[in-house]
Every structure is written in structure tokens, then in C-alpha cells.
Image (tube, rainbow, N blue to C red; front, top):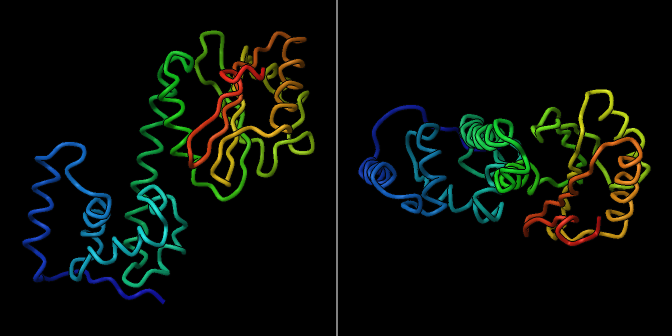
Length: 232
């Protein structure tokens, strides 16, 4: 069971917290180390106690700051000192980051803000432990009109049907689409199955006037674009 979180009272670390707050407010983007960012996020939930050790333990357990923020709340609470309030505080930051990144994608043409799209997909998918398939449907101005979660599992014709992908585009009035999925292994390099299903969907789209702009694969080690690799 996780240790209970303290809710009130001053403590010996108050000076440390004040100094950290000052660095956060007056420093640049790199003013705080990753463990210090976690420390600060834990302050509100842990009014007393050593947040530094908890923050460092979380980083050791989940590998990176992003790994901590994307961890399951139940897994976070397995770390001594982390209770429900702390887990909720960390998850709220992950939620805010996703919504900020998504707004950068939805408010402008996708092809004209490609890096914003990659940032959004990385935040949303890079740390998933299951393989997830999505189709981003675009209008004639290449604005996002539907971010469709096709399903979880390996990307092949058992999970994603080319005709169904194109039929949905026709149904919602999309003129183009971008395929997206993640590799939980970390490496974004496309498999032969990734290439084959992409080509089948692109061919089905050509027959009905729906353009497949790209297939983007997201992994913890980065991303891969089948279009930039000349595979579609």
C-alpha cells in the first residue's frame, strides 16, 4: 500500500521549496532538472516530506519524465510516498500536455504544421504499451476533421480493412488521410506488414479519390514516415 500523503503543516523543506519555486518562475525552459519538475508537481499533494527522493524514485522506476507522466495511476501509487492525490496531480499534467499539443494540430492545416502533429502523436502514443492504430481524416484544406481510433493490436488486414478506412473517409467527407500507429518496442522502423497494408489502403484511396498522405509510426526512439522513406 502507498504511504499516506500529508495535507498540512510547515516542514523543514520549506526553504528548498521556495528556492525551487523561484527558479521555476525566473529561470528558462531548462531551469529545473527532470526530478525537480516532478518535485514541484508533488508539492501540492505532499505538504510534508522529502519530495526529492520520491521524484528520483519515480524517474528510476519509469525511466523518463514522460514515462512518469504517462504511467498508469495504479502503477504510480505502488511507489512509497505516492498516493491518489499525487497520482492525480501527475496525470493532470499529462492531460494538459495532450490538450495543448492537440490544439496546435486542430487549429491549422496538418501538412503545414507537421512538427506540431509529430509532437502531438509522440505525447499521445510514444509510451503506450500496446500497439494502437489511428486514422487522421482531413478535409480539402488538410484540416483535421476526425481522429479515429481504429483499434489496438498489430496493424494488418485482420485489424484494419482498407475498404473500411476509405469508406469512412467517404462517409465523413474527408479528401485525405494519414495513418498512424505506434511500436511499443521503441523502434519506429516500419515492418513489411506496415508497408503492405499502407500500400493497399493507398491503392483503395486512389480508386475513390482519397489521398493517403503518409503513414507515421511512433516509438520512444522517434518516428518514421513511410512517405519520406519512399515506401508509398
